[in-house]
Length: 69
Image 1: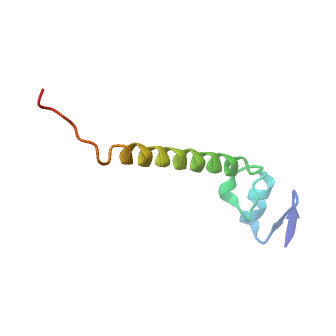
Image 2: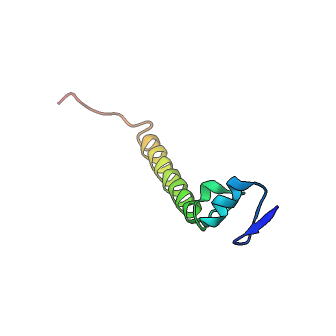
C-alpha cells in the first residue's frame, strides 16, 4: 500500500491514477474532482428541464381547443 499525492493506492493502476491527480477511490470524478462538479451541474439541469416538461404538459389539462374555425 502506497500513498501518492495524498491518495491511498493498493495497486499499480491506482498509483498511475493518483500520479495524474485522480482519486483512485472515485476515478470517474476526474483529475482533482473536476468532473464531479460537472456531473452534479448536468444532473441539476436535467432535473430542471424535466420539471419544466411536466409543468408544460400538465398546464393544458382540462382545456378545450376550438378548431371549428
